[in-house]
Image (cartoon, rainbow, N blue to C red; front, side, top):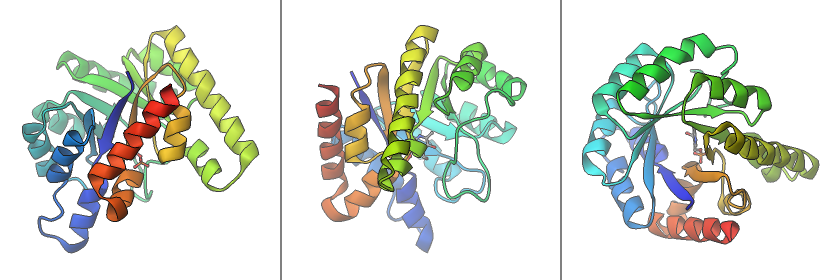
Length: 244
Ligand code: PXP
């Protein structure tokens, strides 16, 4: 089973461009679930540039599928996550100046910083995932941190594909393939995401260790042209085709 987590951040980005209440990321989440999403992902950033605190509470209250709360490992986010009680938390690095999450968590250098966050969320019954680069060092550190899940950052691969850099794309995909295989050996559940479109999602769905893809920007962008339900339907079909 390969799950699709739909990230609704950029519905909130459009809403915030004008202030006010529309388009509503909760409405998008409900529609995404109807259209076949297996879960909803939202990232509460420190600068609240898209999802806001109230969106997280409303998402948790409204949706019937698991909520994956993406957050930086800070005390403030920990308090909000514990108060929200999502199914899962994905810990991500965060820089104020970045446009999106650039690169994976520094699980080696930040080992001691991350450990108590993972422990506290796990104690509260939240499934913790670490957003990491597909490297042996990151995987080893993630395993030693005892988070049950890792999400492999697919951004470098997707960028190489988008730029038509075949050599780099092959190199990056080989890293993802090796990392996914390694998760199985380390007993980690394997997710992947960032920058995926129909084609890259189809390709990566062939890696059997991956059980969840988290996809946002492309689906919301495509929804402008074909509608959100249709973009999710086509994505689901691409993933199913890749898995077969
Ligand atoms: N997974 C993680 C951990 C992310 O930070 C993001 C971006 O918010 C995604 C998946 C989805 O990436 P995209 O919006 O490029 O599909």
